[in-house]
Image 1 (cartoon, helix red, strand yellow):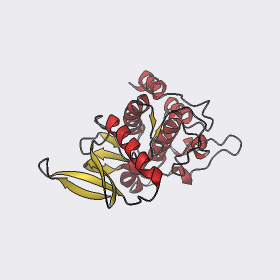
Image 2 (cartoon, rainbow, N blue to C red):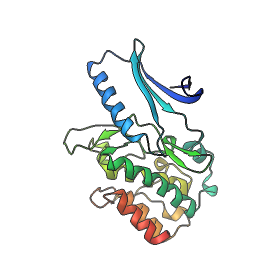
Image 3 (cartoon, rainbow, N blue to C red):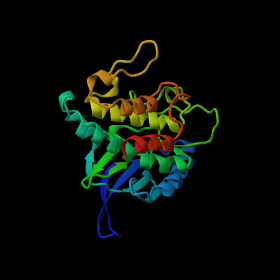
Length: 239
């Protein structure tokens, strides 16, 4: 990944991603397919614009709008458990992520890698979702696809069958990390249910904790099935 300048647009900064492997005959088709999907998403204000995509003898390239801000991973890594985020701040964070996920899901796409390093807070406070290299089109097939990050990845995604609620699960994990000051891999889980144990570490309303636990339920059938459902509950309780 490189930082570049768009010479046709007043030297505006951009991000250039290079994929060097060209020996895989399926890679070109996959690259073109994902590029088309990204073009359909990139007009949303919380998603970096895809400026161009092309190939040459050095590989395949994606060119994105450069987003100025601070990675959420950096903000959370500097945070001690005693300095965890308050409920109102986390509700804003979760709502911001859900708003862009609603748009992504309505375009029949699952992000599959919601985590702090893929979220940037711009200097105006807006949350931007980046890194769409792991996206999957929703096709309701039984074909197994393995991708995700330990700690944020839902159980069914770890089994190769992600769905929109898998992104909701990961979003809840980000919120719980902000509240507790600890990444999900450092939190204990209930031995019987598999549910994350975190409430005793924070001061948070029962209503918001219930929403987060439902978002992060280990059984996708008991989880929120759509972003709209989560936003409705958040708006009903905290708007």
